[in-house]
Amino acid sequence: MVADDDPRHRHRYQRRIIILYQAGWLRSAVGEQVSRASSVIERACSLRRCAASLKDMSTSQARWPLRLRYDGIIRPCRPSGAPEPMSPTNSQRRTLLGVAATLVVLCVVARLLPHPPNFAPATAVALFGCVFFSRRWHAGAVVVLGMIVSDWFIGFYDTGVMLTVYASLLMPLVAQRFLGKSNAVRLGTVAVVSGVGFYLTTNAAVWFFTNAYPPTLDGLAASYLAGLPFLKWTLLGNVFYTAVLFGTYGIVRRSVAGIAQPARA
Image (tube, rainbow, N blue to C red; front, side):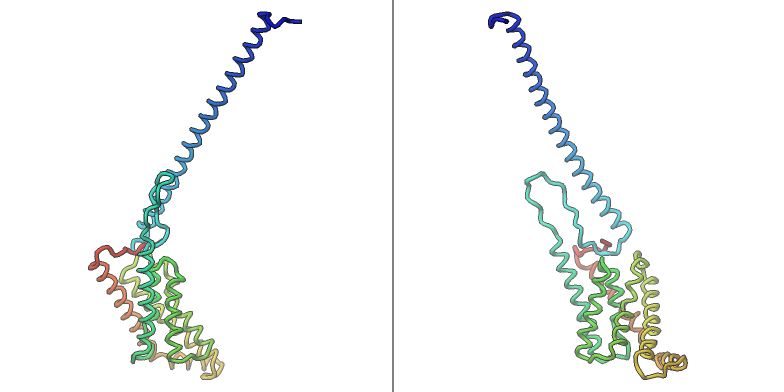
């Protein structure tokens, strides 16, 4: 049995105390290093997210210079706890809602006022919305709403023919990728092709859904022949309203300071 005042006994206890002290210091040092590493990793991830967001914004604006970027606003990196800066999203949304309401009113008023047959702005509105809005369904909703409101005043007709007319007016939405770099040639091409497509589909719908023509190839040919006089006004209306909408927008964008530049979102 070892006495309490034995030097070997005291030395053993001193070594245990030193080992425990070193282990505690090591744990605290490791914990501090882990905390520093976690902080560095968090900052690196934050910088990476900001860099990716800026890269996406620059790529989007370079690839689609004629589209309005109104969502996905890039917010600057800020310290934790700092107040979030005010975002311009609300003003841009108000601008978009104002443009959408103006386009709906144009669709309704142009159909209610006296005009040549099929000389309407619906296709041009779809074409303009396809370039102006970042999502196709926004442009489609504007056109369909304008047609429904105007038909409510004018009067609804055969459901099959009416749905075909609505769908035919949305043909420019298919060419959204083609209109990525919009110019007069591409806009005019889409306006004319959409007018021809409207003529082909709507006259076929009249032949198919109504009893106006016999259900034969001769009846279909007669339907197309009867619709030829309207084709001219359809094409003229598409080209005229396309020039008016894009020309007006170009003038406003150059004259009003600070107006948003369109870009794909």
